[in-house]
Length: 315
Ligand code: CP
Image 1 (tube, rainbow, N blue to C red):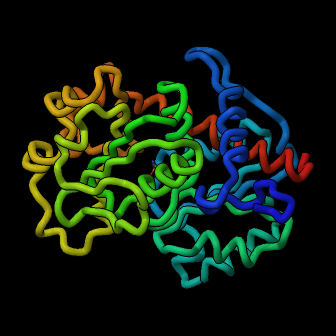
Image 2: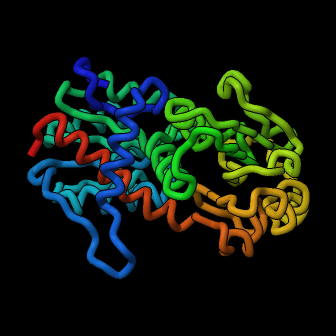
C-alpha cells in the first residue's frame, strides 16, 4: 500500500483494508460481459508499459495479465525466461533495472523463490508498481481475489460460509492467499484437508481446522477448493501415490461431493490434473465453477490495473 492508503504494489492480500479488496471485486464485476459479446475495454493505461516477467510456468495468470493489459490499451512486454538474459547469468534485479530503463511502469512477477516480488518492489523507482503473479508457496494475491469474486457471485458474501480446501495445501500459495482474503472480508469457517505429508503449517492458517479426513471436511460444506499436487516443489517424489490411488483416497470424486451441501460449488485454481485431485466428471459437472474462475481472473486483473491507473493518474 502507498502511504495515502491507496494500492501501489500488490504483494499479498494480508494487511489490505476490506475496502481495497471490495473495490477491486466491484470494479471487476464491471468488466464482465456475457459469453459471445465483445470483451470490455478501457483506455486508462494508454501510453503506459506493463512488463510480464514469468520465471515459472503459467497459462491462466500470464494470459489474463497480457489480455488485461491490452484491453486497457497498455504497451505489453512478455519476457520469456528461456530466451532472456537470465539464463546467461543476469540477476533478476539487473533484468528489472534494464526494463525500468525502457520506461516500464508496472512489473508483473511470477517466481519460484519466496521474497522476489517484495525485493523488486523495494528496489524499483517510486512511480513503478509491482504485482505478485505467484510467489513460491507463499502468495498468489490475484488468484485469491478471483477466488473471492467467484465465491461472492455464487454465495452472495462470505459470512457464515464453510470453505473446505482439499489437496496439497503445504505447497499452496493459492490456499494462503484465499484464506488471507476470506479473513479480511468475512467470518467463514475454514477446513483444510490434506493427505499426510501435505498438511499446511498451522501458523499460516490461524483458526482453520486442519485434518487428513477428506470426507469429514467436505461434510455440509458450501465451497470446495481442490488443489493439485505441486510436484515441482516436492523433492522426494518416490513416496507419492499413483494417480488412481490418490483419487480414491484423497481426490474429489462424485461420491465425496455428495457429502457437501447440495448447492456447494467446486473450485480449482488450475492447472488441473483430471482424475488425480479431482474426478473429470466433477470438474465438468453442474457444481463446478472452474471456468468461471478463469473468466473472473481476467476481470480481476483488469480491475487491479485500473485501480493503479486511477490512483496515480497514469493515463
Ligand atoms: N492458477 C494459476 O496460477 O494458473 P497458472 O499457473 O496457469 O497461471
